[in-house]
Image (cartoon, rainbow, N blue to C red; front, side):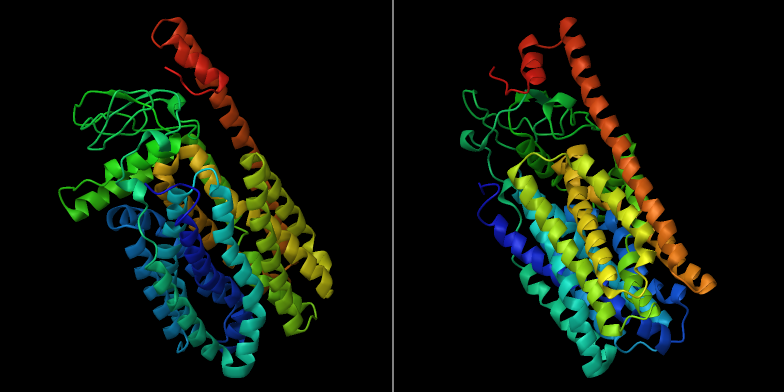
Length: 516
C-alpha cells in the first residue's frame, strides 16, 4: 500500500503545481490583454470581460459533470483530455476576429478545458495525503499564485515583441506541456490495496457494509472478506465529517464492525463505488444525481452560498486592477506590476497557510472568515489608491494574500464537511455556485464603469459583498460547532437508554481511540 503523506504523493504535487502554474494562472494573467481587447475589438468593458469571466464560469459550471467523469474514467484521462482542449482553445483564440470569437474560444471551450483539469487535480491530492493535506494543497495552489506573479510582466513583454496574438500562441504551447505531467498522475494504490494492521489507525467503531474488499481490523482474528464496504452510518464514526447523507446499507448484506482511520474508510468507500454498472450513461447520470443530492447537507449548502458571494467579487479584482491603474494615470508596465503584486500576495498566502497548518492546529472556518472580511475591507478602501502605483501594489498584495488563504481553506473545509470520499462531488457542487457568482458579478463591474466612467462604485459594492461572505462563514462555524455538540449529546442519551455500548461513547466523548 502507498504510504500517505509521503512517497509518490509529492510527485503528484509537483505535477499539479505545474498545471496550476501554466493553466489556471494563464487565465488570470490574460487580464493584461483586457485594455487591448477593448481597443482592438471596439468593445465595451462589460462585454470584453466575458471573454475571461466565461472561462472561469464554465470551469465551475462543469464541476458536477467533471466529478462524475472523474469517478467513471479516473483522474489521469480527464486531466489529459482537458489540457488538450484548453491548449487548442488558446491557440485558436490567437486568430480571433471579434470579441465574440474570444468569448467562445477562451471563455466556453477554454473553460471546459480548465474545468477538466482543476477539479481532478485537487481531489487526487486528497487521496495521497491525510495529515499533511493542507501543506500539499497549498503547494499545488501556489502554482497559480506563482503564475500570477510571473506572467503579467512576461505577457506584457511578449505583447510588445509579437502582439498579443503571438503571446497566446506561446502560452498554448506551455499549457500543452501539462499533458506530459498528466501522464504521471497514476491512481492512488489505496483504491485496490488491502488495509493491514500497520496502516490502520483505530477510530471509534461503526457499522459498515463491506463490498469485495479485504479488511483486517486491529484486534480481529483474521481478515473479513466479502462483507463489502459502504458509507459510514453514524456521525461518530468519522471525526472529519460533520454531516452525512445516504447512509443506507446495500444489497441486503449483513452489517459488520470495522475499525479504520477516517481517511482509510473513505478511500475504501471510493473503491466500493467503482463496480461495473449497467451502462456508461446510466452510471454517469447516477453519479451526477448523487453529486447534486449533496445539497441536502445544510452545512455544504450554506458554504456554497458563501462561495457564491465571494465569487461575485473574486475575478473582478485581478481583471480590472490593471485597467483601473491605467485609468488613474499609471504607466502600463507599472500597472502590470500591480497585478504581479497580487500574484506575490497569493503565493505568500497559500504557502504561508500551508506551512502554518502543517505545524499547528488552525481553525479553518475562523481563518476563512477573517480572510474574506479583510479582502472586503481592503477592496472598499482601494479607490483611495488613486494614481499611486505603490498603493495599488499594496492593495494587490493584501487582497492576493487573503484570497489565496481562502482558496486553500475551501478544500480543507469541504473535507471536514463531507469527507474525502465525496470531495470530488462536493467540489463540483461548490464550483457550480462559484460559476453563478462569476457570471453575475464580474461583468457588472465593467458595466458600472461604462455607466459612471469610474471603477470606484464597482470596487466599493463588490468589497461589501465579499465582506458579507466572511460573516456567513462565521455563522457556519457556529452552526457546525453546535451540531457536533448536539450529536455528542445524542450519543450519550442513546447510551443511557441501553442502545449503544457505554465504552464506545466514553471513548468518543473523550476523543480517544476505541480499545475494544
